[in-house]
Image (cartoon, rainbow, N blue to C red; front, top):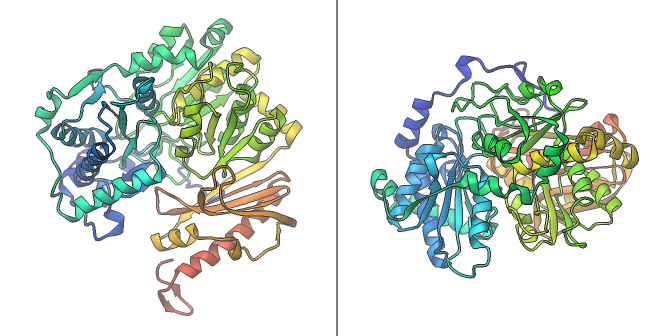
Length: 564
């Protein structure tokens, strides 16, 4: 990011920075959200409801309300199979799990929880849903994942995955959100719950071996024989996340030379190095957060990490260090569509429209169709289900792809298979993904990419979400004629919640975050850093105009907006 890094970025966290877990859990139970305050209501962004007990945005009341709303949604849509329930390693995930189970059991929902009270990665939940539903027309399963992904330790998150196995569509999350907020406004009247001890022992609460079911099936999506046969050395850092106890069974089951560099689970995540803004985030795509594994790169032929719920990946090579997410996504596409003969000949490449144009160029080189959608993995679910998409990827280091026979593996992001694919590529090609990307860049162009995040009020986010072509006051972008201005995604026509401006050698996109009070500007240039800087400056001018239009309260002409 071009935003100035905190002086502590990339360094270990000081003890004073660590979250007080006792206070956090107390706040979860004791603090009561005020539904008249927007920031304290249930809000499903691009990936579920997220917040912090300290901010009254993720408390027991939220989980009671959302879980009851999900129960009503299931009943309304006749979803009466088991619900697969998983959690990550964030401190607040266990209390939220207990709350959710109290409501699910009271509503007599058959719930599948992990054997041994294990943590469960997001892809294992998606895999379990799809495995159960295969061949069924009724009695379908769905799932809940309790995770805020790579967010800081004080955060919590709650995601619902319908029977399709992936993130729910906006119509689904909108209904659940509205119903949950209705419960909050009515002091939780209508929410059913029983004590946790009774819920845990209920006949509707079942144990499921997520690890074995997922691990035993991996050979159908990754060529494990090739990895084992090459005898390459692999390193993995689970970043203290939900997949921490998956990697040893993977290594043992498939005979891999795999070293787990850190198997610690600590809800403060004290072992992390600080992210760009001086906060702890378990982000495997962040150079700052990945300092420990980067420092070990020469010990392994290829190394990788996953975030807290293991739906995102980071790949570390000896030559390149941490590969930028867009670089590895491009290599994944380049490799998969040449080494998966079982896939449909017309299987397309899915990408979010803020991902690198290098993916477009690789897709064209392969003669494949590009399917470009708004931010959010939910847009790939249908295509992965029916095999019309071979691959779906996001610039934030999330991806999934089909089984080797061309059928669906998971319809949510899967950091584990994305990481293992780097090992398969290295083993089969005799070169790591960093080296392969270098070849692609020499052939197709070497882009420079950046993303800028900045604070934004809810009013400003709404204004940015309504950006239109009329608000772009230029005919040129950094010296090149603007070719296109889009507010709807080319692949599916869905609104992108912002604007993307495209010229011959570069582009930018601006949109509000779906999970945080920030806005994001994405920029890319195939002409170098100076050209990138010019694109960013012009993008910022457009964004500033939208922000100013959202500001209606001023102190005086010379002091400006009280909200900005």
